[in-house]
Length: 271
Image 1: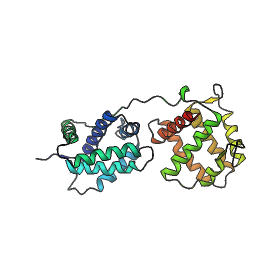
Image 2: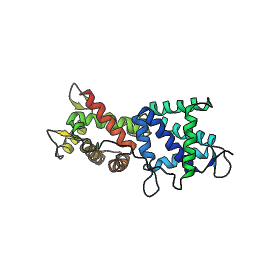
Image 3: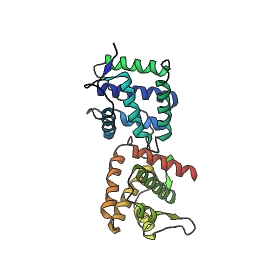
């Protein structure tokens, strides 16, 4: 008789399967995803949006009652992963994982099936099958190794706002981003007021050798946007930018924070 799984059990099998894949390839993108998929003590996922996306994925699968078969569970996992394949930070890693799953579905003897069935058996045998997945991550908040001088810190902020906000789907900030462009030849921003606000903000931060840690740059970015909103015609829209930053700052596993550290690393590697 074929095993059937509840929505929660299916999710837990998926987490184990993705973790199995992660152990094979050690992908940063997959590590971030697993961290966000982890359950907290209150029963919610580290990133609440993860569970919402999972529930929407399950709804797209035709199944009777509240239970899913093994194949339906795999299809639900594919739909869920496709949601995150659209994010630039995850794109390559999730794409490779989706290809692995397709290979598995096209070959009944694929080793992936063996592990998938093992994970189903494990989950069904446990009273609480949730895995509180812990991916060891460097404390990047105050890392001196990632500290940047004032200008590179500004460039990291600009890259972050371009990549995270525009590609995630917030397209209302073209004027802000155009005003923030740094002109290398004249060493000023398109709108001089922008650089003035940035310098006003960073001068209040206690830094070592005029270098800012990722957390300090992040705080400066938040304060920069708040000050910019005070002199901008789009005050409400700019303030909306600040709200998700607060959540990101409090949770280093937030996908936004991972985008932030990637921008810091990219800029540091160029300097």
